[in-house]
Image (cartoon, rainbow, N blue to C red; front, side, top):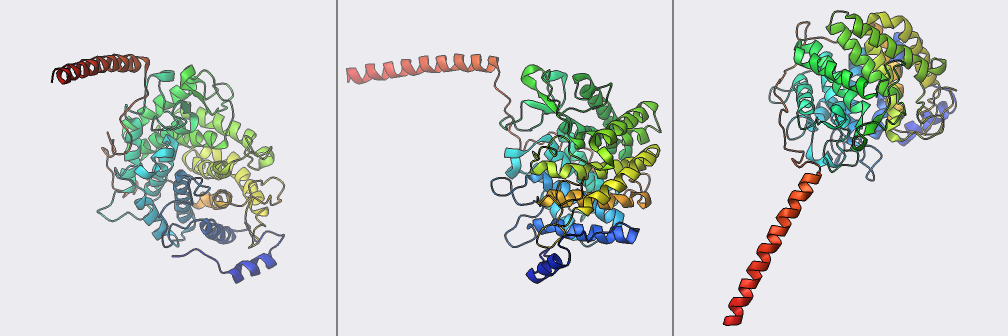
Length: 460
């Protein structure tokens, strides 16, 4: 299946809608039609289904293209939810092909060819897409392929492995997985937020307490280390392990708030309304709506006001819409506050989708309804997520293994998988001392050997 528009179609669309948005959100049918167009436009940036393309990924990573590997997983997750909310099966074959092609050698979303830029959050975005497929009963893969639940469990198991957790900062996941990657010395909220989110969702789906125990443990660590402010519920980006995570970078990204809010909503649901989790959901939503939806329209406050957003950041507002929408299903007491805001924000999003050659490309800035000239897959993904999330009220809640879930699991998947990540660890002072001793011994041995050889040759 190709997703390209002809030049004539683009030209005609551009002439018809040069300055006014073609999108309507006036009814469920209008929302579905708008979402369909946005999904199509988003996939114009995808070439993995073309001859010579790599299934599953957007062009990249830099400098080969704008997009890192993780954003492909985010895109397929968005389309899985698109299918679940609209019933449109147009892209299901592509979703299946892409999600299965990228599982990696260990079937845990760690393909060797992305090692140089593989973070815990990158792997988790693919794992969360698989989890979403299981929760929404997306068509199961063939019997000889890993199931959606099994893939999510495999990702979780690799991240729960002792190899990923160390004593620096008292625990928590690092940002990057290989110690050779830039960012390995940084522990951050999104890596731990994704892990927390997957733990909460796996606990609810499977009923297995080991997942909820990890979710509890992760939340406690994030709060104890100071990434979550226990008073305001602001969530800060992260800190360096060299300083035992005391030098907290207090920049705030919207998706950090949303990943914890959705995970807390799953824990609230899993624990049958535990007051602790209700309070946490409530405080996260209260802070998030106030901070990231000024005037009830999503704004990426970390970078949008000063035009400092990078490619990854163009996607964040879409995640907030998606994860807040699901939060209303798992914690219905939030719906009255969340849904009207998502409605207004989605309308603002499509109002500025008036750019590009086809006259309907979306930009980053939604507040004033004016297209900002910055096109890309992330901008389309965010607008699509905002629009399709308006259908959440009529969507089915995520299933579990006892409420209709059919996905094949693999509780031991990914455990101890070393096929991708090197076994080496960062060099310590002890390692350096040991290496020095070995070097001295080898040098001494070499001198002795050469001396013996000289003596032998001299006597010949």
